[in-house]
Amino acid sequence: MDLLVIALYMAGMIGIGWYAKARAKTQADFLVAGRRLGPVLYAGTLAALVMGGGATLGGIGLGYQHGLSGVWLVFSMSAGVALISLILAPMINRLKVYTVSQMLELRYGDMGTKVSGIVMLSYTLMIAVTSTIAYGAIFSVLFDIGKVPAILIGSSVVIVYSVLGGMWSITLTDMVQFVLKTASIFFILLPMALLKAGGFEGLHAKLDAQAFDFMKLGAGNIFTYVILYVPTMVIGQDLWQRVFTARSDSVARWAGLAAAGYGFAYGLAGALIGMSAKVLLPGLVGRDAVYTEIVRLLLPAGVAGLVVAGALSAIMSTSSGCLIATATVAKEDVRGRRRDSSAHDEIGQSRFYIVVFGIAMAAIACLLQDVIAALTIASDILVGGLMVAVLGGMIWRRGTARGAIASIFAGMAGTLGTMAVLLDIYANLPIYIGLAGSQVCFIVFSLLDKPTSTAVLARWDARVRNSKAAGSNAAINDAVTASRAQP
Image (tube, rainbow, N blue to C red; front, top):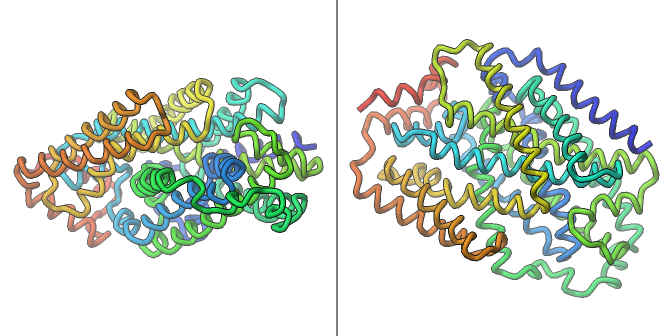
């Protein structure tokens, strides 16, 4: 019965992808859902993206290990969503670009998008890998098969429905997934787990007092979660690509804040489920297995399948969103746009990149073992490499293209170099060194460089202040390229 429910769910996702294929008629339709999502679709797809494998399996696993202190991973993600929604989302929405790298070139002028594009591509691909590891772990237990075939089953479904309709497929499947995971986590698994564990009184009686200490993880580790995952949400291509789909500034702001509020509740629910699992299954090894094991213990056939499908829905939302983000960055930034391509050609090229990076996503997932490890590597790459260049360009007008490029190289070298020396993925020091080096280089190289030209800054100001300045879809596609011709 459980396998039948899950099989029907997966078939449904492919069916929705096929239905959405007819709506993907232009490049904007395929990559950013035509930039016309209203508050319900926007909030649902954003919440589905953020509350994925790391928040679901990782959040519940951290609750199992650390009690209420395990909420800090998901709380940091949700705080990042709140920050970008409240402060940056309306401006991002008005830029009318497709990628973070295009925003950098719009702000700084001709700096080239390949360097920043490669950094962003590495991040989005690793987040997709994180989700692939997570649903691979679930399929492995469900079907009693090895990790590799489990990953191949799940990734095939994600690739197929993403290829069919692009962002429209992902938006519509996200809404189904949002409803399913909400019902599974909040209305089935959480009350059942608490009831079986004896309620809050049972948790207090059977767990040590530290399990209820929000600071159990330690101030240093909590600060690292905040410094990694808040900026990850603020500058990640996966989240920006969702912001690009909003039909207005108000949708981007207020529906985004609603998604952030959902995330805070989701994090708390996950920690409580993990704590209940600690009471009921105290000897589990490996935090990624906690979700599946607690479902198998508590729920009858059919209902268990529905709840597992809820987890899969959360995880696949992130995987598909990051997969199309990776393909978009590869096509728009790393390869570069071709101005003579037709809409049909552009969509075909996007589909090609989704398939290529979907295969890469599955292959890397087969080599890595831990969801939080992959998530940490991805966030280190993004925050160390791009945070200063992106946010610095928004708040400091004296920042220049050379300063931005220097900050990217310095941040990447400092972060990954220190991580390699320490041989510790979870160490706090690499991101601190990477950010410090990135900031110093951004300031120094910008001050040594000529100021950004007034023509470039004027175009930036016009785009930020008035969405009508972006003009037609053709002008949107050509805006960054046109800036290169200016002095």
